[in-house]
Length: 396
Image 1 (cartoon, helix red, strand yellow):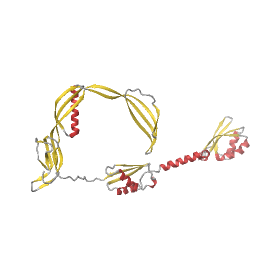
Image 2 (image 1 turned 30 degrees about the vertical axis):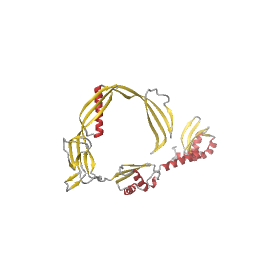
Image 3 (image 1 turned 90 degrees about the vertical axis):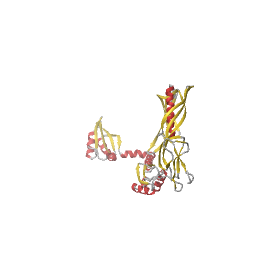
Image 4 (image 1 turned 180 degrees about the vertical axis):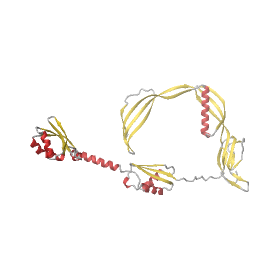
């Protein structure tokens, strides 16, 4: 016979029937309309399955045929429920855990704000809180995302668009800030003066009156572009703007060692693995010393995460890397070139990357105590203008 429908939900048992009239017993089951399936000969008897609800009807048939039965298997929902009922506390704890897990999954755990530059993240989070979007809020209590984005745009006037996206228990607020016209600072009238002694190589006055020319020698503090326009009767004070470049001389005292040392990794390493519990770390593997003469240790943290939460539990790996130091030597010429290159890089860092070293001259050089000492004069074309406010309106 075929297996009855929903037998797993209704429950069924597996029996082993023995006796002289096993075949008569099976025929009696069929005559009594008791459904059995998976009937197989086993030893001196037979194995079969039948529904749990029809099990009580077997006793009269067993007495009639003189057969004996032995239950070899139980399956289905009624038996599962019976086992759980015997362990009431375990079942209750399992149900309680499922309920708590479900409730935790219906809370907002994390809110992330992206795309904002001028508007403070705290202001956006405060506006979202006023609309009911904040950590540990029930997800089912949140308004429709379209309504939330409209209300947030109203509360944050400096935005042109706000998007709100929920991914599980995390919410991301995407902000597109409105374009604002550039606010130019209010400047008082001023001159452009030379910040150092130089020879002017280029002068461009965007606003103001140039008072020097190319190839002119200027001293520190001389006016290059004046913020005073007009004559004595008609005077106008403006903010002088422009660009002035000039040749400037810088003297450097350079010191370069002839012997060098380079630290490199050999590729050998020893790993140590720890189990991290809060502020405690328990070493699991990697005991013993590495035996390296010199080494460097790198630490990698791998905390456990649940959704967006970082749990105080995880693994930590320490990698002890062997380091070797290689000695080298520079020739006097190589040391000289390296020292000059260092000085040129310092000039670019101090006076702008658009500065140009026109020439250099070694004024003095000596080799002493394993080092090369030099005094070098650099001729550099660089920006020389700086601002000077006009204190009064009666002249330059």
